[in-house]
Image 1 (cartoon, helix red, strand yellow):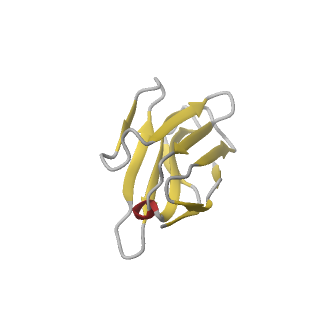
Image 2 (cartoon, helix red, strand yellow):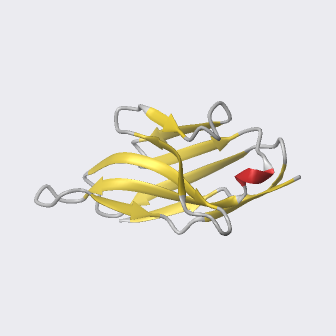
Length: 120
């Protein structure tokens, strides 16, 4: 299973970006999908996640600004980021829990990361 993220870039404070992450490969079921980020010198942190039922949760720092969604027909998760702040600058990683075989449990997979830079 591979996760391909896209949509990062440079944006001014107050602007918006939309990240996408598509899962491909041997996929039977995609369970939770989410986005994490890691800023320079900091630990990776959860930004938002959405389960297979469509229930989502967010880090307090992004609530009311970011929206996570998924398209199960495309095995894709999106992160709409609005009202961006310089402190949102980080490498954003997508994560998915995927089941590839009924004889094995689901596993977590990570995308390679996409850089988001917010200028002040």
